[in-house]
Image 1 (cartoon, one colour):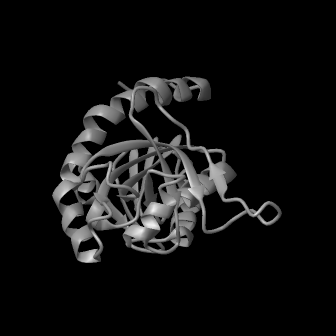
Image 2: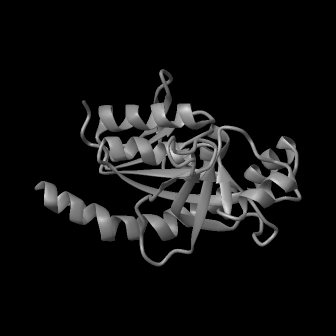
Length: 223
């Protein structure tokens, strides 16, 4: 079990993760069972698309590397026309609407950990890509964004009692109905997303959570 990792990032695809790998000077250390990139304190794991992949990758990361926190990062679709491409949100609630609770029949709701000072949004997680305007409109009654991994990342983190923070950028809106559009938009906005995370999120994460956690665990935070 490796214990030097402070922050682990779970991302679905290398398409989204490429600026993080390059910007943080992460080196590939493993290809299976998941593709891993890391430096002394940061790990990035490519989970693959979908809830099962996200849950397995997060559990693997928590058990093998015991990070202080997990950050689930990546693209998400907007459920309404009120959001623009490239907008970034800190997720404060997740609705798993396609796997309702057995007794009540209501969608399962999860609460990721949050940091102060960021614009928040509600996320819906589905195992199926939601592209049509009509489907997005229905989901917009309960969520601002939709992805295919978020709920499972939080579930796995809770099993391992690991903090989970989530940031998503808008890669498509009801006007974008093809996977080709989404890929092009991810390429167009992924660098800005990385820069935002590095410049705005990492300092807050480090000062408000990581230093306090390190002190509580009994070792001196690095400067």
